[in-house]
Image (cartoon, rainbow over all chains, first blue to last red; front, side):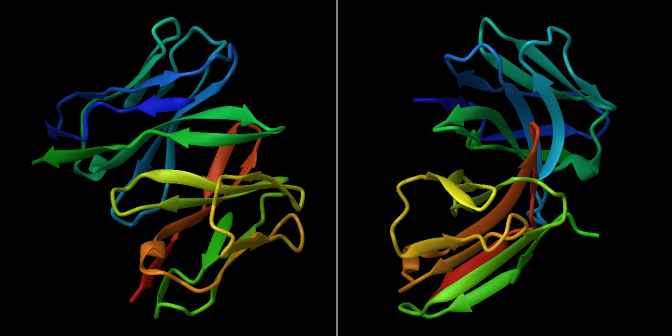
Length: 116
Length: 110
């Protein structure tokens, strides 16, 4: 079964500090996409960052960066200079092909608290 | 302009009722989805449509029936609602690798 595992149900960080959220996944594909989504209390799903598996360079979006280890099937998210607005649920996901279509498979999420 | 819009945002209804959730996307995408987020925040795919055709049906009870009148719309109709159907339902559309989500519909069955 294709799965995404987020081993940290909850994490906390002090404002302005750095935090890393973990994610591992299982796939037999060689080319795929990985994502981190943020879900604040408003419940809107917001794409934070995307990584293409065939690219060795880690994706970066402002204060958000990933550590993509393809052989280890690991895709962690680093948030630098944490802000109060970063407090949210964070979901790791990957895009998998099935039955001629593609779907996003999500991890169970990590709840991030940012302390002032 | 909202890229993916769902209505209603909140829905409270009694057991046994039939209800519908509507979804529209203005992104020109061919692929649309319905996801269910349970009380533990777990997101699970229910259906996938590609250009109005059902592609993925993830073992969802047949009380749930999606309908896609055109590729910009994917509605979800639920018959004989049960307490366990209470959840947040998300519509999404995808172009290329990126998926865009609606704001979700919180369904509460009482």
